[in-house]
Amino acid sequence: MRLKEKINDLGASKTPFVFCLNYAADDGFVYELDSLPENIAFYIDGKSYGYAEKHKTPAITKKTPVLRQNYNLQIKTLKEKIADGDIYMANLTCPTKIEIEGSLDDIFCSSTSEFRLLVKDGFVVSSPEAFVEIGGHTISTFPMKGTAVFDGEESVKKLLENPKELAEHTMTVDLLRNDLSIVASGVRVEEFRYPIIIEANGQKLIQTVSKISGELPRGFMLGDTLFALLPAGSITGTPKKKCVEILKEIEGYERGFFCGIFGYFDGEKLKSGVSIRYIEQMDEGFIYKSGGGITIESDENAEYEEMLKKVYLAF
Image (cartoon, rainbow, N blue to C red; front, side):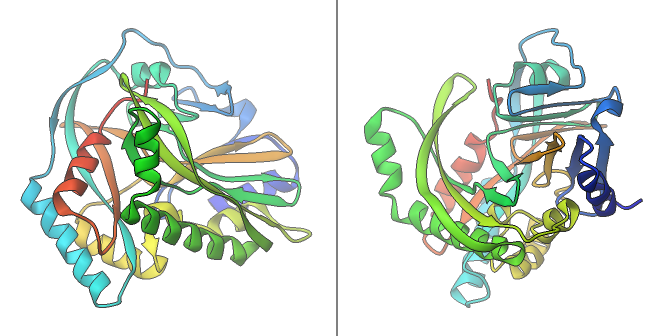
């Protein structure tokens, strides 16, 4: 049975399940909650599913990122696409080779992120970003755009007043509002660009978030609803279809499960997160995939530094 149809069937029968979909929405898994394989563990909404064991507190001991000039060239190419009117904003990502002390299990168990997923010997996600929440006939999404180091209330004010960050967040909210309108009516922005503070490897970060909601029609299906919204707008750009095409060409690597989604359904309510803060275990070592939103106002060096700062463990 295909992933979408399985989610539809389990949702219709109100059977609790967990799921994970990759960025391209053509791979993943869906398991009834009481038959979760031993190699998978989730933590969502304060609840744990599956088992992982911590042996030590993990740490990233070395980062080997892409060359600055290569990343800057990709940014310049995207800005040319924006200047030509092909797109308005895009979320550029890249892989960074890392060395870690510890295991994927250790990272999962040490994380304090709201959305966590472990596929043993595969990858681990420690994400602060919600994707969609569905309860009754109400659907909400929570785009997260805008990051800065927290250094008191002045740093929050500086982030909120940054014109580049405001433009990036506003375009993402507009994209997600349009996306929700595909599946829901009465779509509205309930909260716009509010700051949250998260812990990240010994330091505090500011993230700006918005909440957008709408009403799903009678007889809606969970699988149909989720797949109609993929990939998540916060990790693509606008317009989405064109951004996906351009990013595939410019990034030059497969995102895989990075920037996909995962979540669970308890029989009544569905909660899901975006698969960012992502570490993948490869034959040659570990890869951390990260990035950031690019607009016409983006400074290449600042974006490169932001991409590197996002290579961290979320304790």
